[in-house]
Length: 505
Image (cartoon, rainbow, N blue to C red; front, side, top):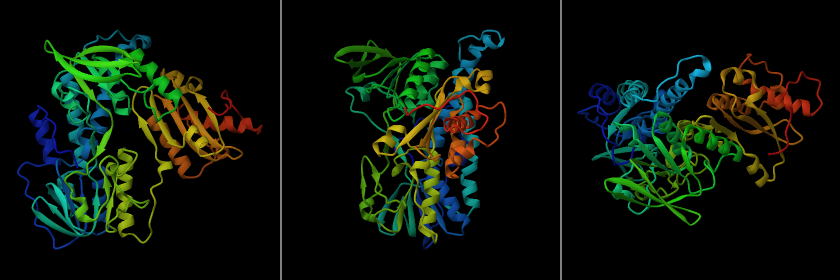
């Protein structure tokens, strides 16, 4: 479910009409409720949609309640629009650098309205896959309304009571607010509103150095904005490898992003019609003038207004709904999935947890959500992707681990593509060939990490991986080269290549 405050409506009427027809039709009338549903799902984002659809396919009666629009943050203001604008920025950036490939120099101007219209077209197309019509065709009753618990087995959708055997809460999360003095008065953007801009900001200030903040800072800089990013810690992406964060910082600086680490925004104000951000770095005060401010300091779970206590469901305002390893809440007939209860706030995790919650609620066997097998990616350039444990996590847990590193500059396809910036690290349990995790920094890291996900899920070790034939040339060959480095370090008689094993990071 989306936050209560709806973002502005995009200006293109045709695109908007097609989009709304799929995610929130005008004049929609909620259906008459059944006497009792097998499953009531609260929230029509990735977790809720995947849960409702899989339950319906298994012959269960399903009601789906959505407060705002189907698709959740992922479609409306998250993964889809952000990756679309990143793609546009990457294309325009590559065109400006195409003299190296023999093309004429490309001018610095960006048709920003065209960029935003492309985002709306993409969003409209993708919305069709989980549209109201498709949900109805699957026998799912869709209610557009606020939802709240009346008792342990009843949810009120608007004014309509929905009785259920099982329920799933998948209300998602919203951009976290800030207590920076003056920021509310000055006005700022979040991921919920930045994709509705009509003009490219000449000067953009980004507060927050997490994944989305870094992605949009680099994208808007490549589109032509003068971007300053403020991060109150010593590096971007504090949960990632130090080397990965440093490579990203250097890449953003080359693009022209003004990076200010260890910098806290202590106030926002207007002066002579301009917006100013007041900052402090190691006691040194500074003021920066901007045209727009993007606040990106994390997300908060959507638990307000649900009357969870009436349903016997424990929760915390900052952490979300309490669930066990099987995604069950303190009400044994109510489950939760997605950003409202998960630590990893990713679309793939939300979809997976939605399916798992239905399996656990109605299936004969219970399944746990395995956090260690979840891949994720920050879609900057280069991309930073990870799966499993980090080396530092292994040390903290007293797990002996060794790291095998392949630099992308040693991968033939990366060289020919002009994308030889980055590395792949594979973490292996010492005295075995068991893969515990991997970090990839590369232009195509979001694709390469999926191979690592399959490898780890299948239990393939480094010795077998070294024998698996890859296409040539391919950037994914870096993964095989890491395995070859492992085998070579053990003096095995296999055909090795340039990479050599490294010690622990």
